[in-house]
Every structure is written in C-alpha cells, then in structure tokens.
Image (tube, rainbow, N blue to C red):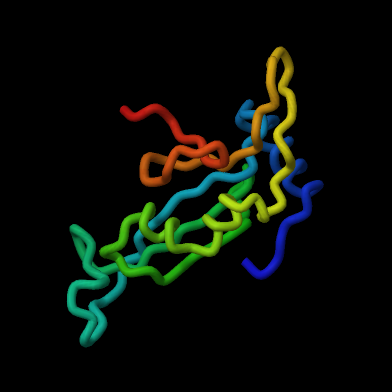
Length: 135
C-alpha cells in the first residue's frame, strides 16, 4: 500500500456502506480467497491447503466490491489471519496511519464510535475490525 487514502475518501466509502448495507462507519470488507494452481516444482507442501494447491488473495473492498487493497500470492497453507498479521495493512491500522477518520458520534450514541473494516472469524476483533458473532 504505497499511498494513504484521504479521510474524505474513507468518509465517502463509509457513507456508501451505510446506504447499501445500513452499516454506519464501515470503511471496507476484508476477506481471503484461495486461487487454485498447479503444484510448483520444489515447493513441497507450502502451497497445499486442505484440498489442493493454491495461492491466497486477501482483499479489502468497498461497498461496490471495488478493490481498496490487495495481497496476492501467499502460500495456500497459510490462513487469512496469518497473512493479514504479516501484511503491510495491519500495522497501518494498529498505528492509525491508514487515514481512517477519527471516531465520531452516531445518532443516539453516547460516545464516539470508531470507523472500522468488516472481517470474518479469520481476523482479530479490534476497534478497527468488526466481525459477526461466531456461529
């Protein structure tokens, strides 16, 4: 991620998530996808997942499924959580240098609510990543 998205752009993305999904303060959806490949010579089991050989693509998309950030080529044996942990996106979120807007009030809220990404169970629950309840 060579650049930072401006706060105004994050606010536009968030407004679209609220309009389309009725989810305020969401700034992107994060998920991984295995892309099947032929076994690479000398790779051993690095690219083998539980079914076949693959590389993993992890993407952050807006409410129209347009890419905001993309990581492609990780070993198929790696989980989404492992790949995210080692990505350049995670430290930017943790250090608050990604450019997300500062927390702000929602209607009928008694405190400021942070802007966040949406992920599944593979990702850690943090103030900057929300995920659904398990099961």
